[in-house]
Image (cartoon, rainbow, N blue to C red; front, side, top):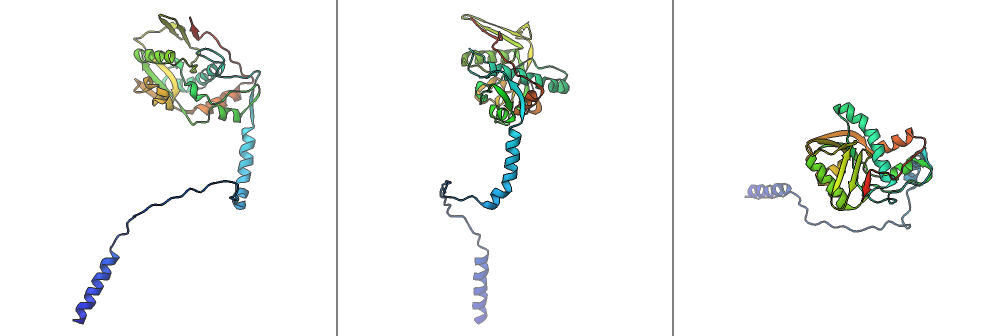
Amino acid sequence: MKQSYIFLFLLIISSCQKLEKQLVKITAKNIAINNTIKASEEIVRVIQPYKRKLASEMQEVLCYSPKEIVKNDGNMQSSLGNLMADMCFEMANPIFIEKTKATIDFVLFNNGGIRASLPAGKITKEHAFKLMPFDNEFVVVTLSGEKVLELVAYFIKSRKAHPVSKSIQLTIGKNDNHLKIKGEIFDKNKSYNVLTTDYLQGGGDNMNFFKNPKQLTLLDYKMRDAIIDYFRKKDTLHSTIDNRIIMK
C-alpha cells in the first residue's frame, strides 16, 4: 500500500513537470524619452568618434551651384526635376547598355521623391542625402506603347512637375497631345525602356503603369549614390526650364 502511494506521488510530480508554460498576458508601457534621462557616458564615448567622422564626411564638398535649384519654379517641370532626371539618365545609361546592349529611352520619377532643394554655393554630400534620403534603387522597365500612353495620361492628369528627362518632348494641348521620344514621334507599336526606381515600379505614387513590364532590369545602383557620383564628376551644376514639356 505504501508503495502505491509512492508510485502515485511520483506520477503526479512527473505529470506536473510535463506541463508546458503558456503565455497568458502581455503588458506594455510607454517610457518618455526626454532630458530627465541621462545619456550613458560609456555609450557616448564609444559613439563620439563615429559621429565626428560621419559629420566630417557629410560636409565633403562635391561641386558648386551658381544659383538655388528648386522643384517649384515651373509649370509641369522644374529646374531641379530636370536636373534629377538628366543626371540619373547620364549615370544609369552606361550600366544599362553594359547589361542589355540597349539604351534607356527616357526617365520618369515622382515629384514627391524630391525631398529638398539645392542651395546656391557649395554642394556637399549632406545636400545629396537630403535631396534623396531613401535607399531607392534604379530599375529599367521595358514598356509597351499602350503602357507609355498610360504614363503620359498619368503625367498630364497629375498636374505635377514629375522629373522627366530631356529625351522627352511632350506638347500638351487643349484637345490633343503630341509626344516625341529621342526626337522621334511616339509609336504605340514600339516598346520603350524607361528608367525609374524600384519604389515607383512597385506602384508607388499610384504609378501602376510600371507594374508587370515586358522586361524588368535591375541596375544594382542606388539613386542617391548616382547623385553623389554625378556631383563629384561635375565642377558646376546647371539646370533650366526648357521645352521638354510645352503647355499650349
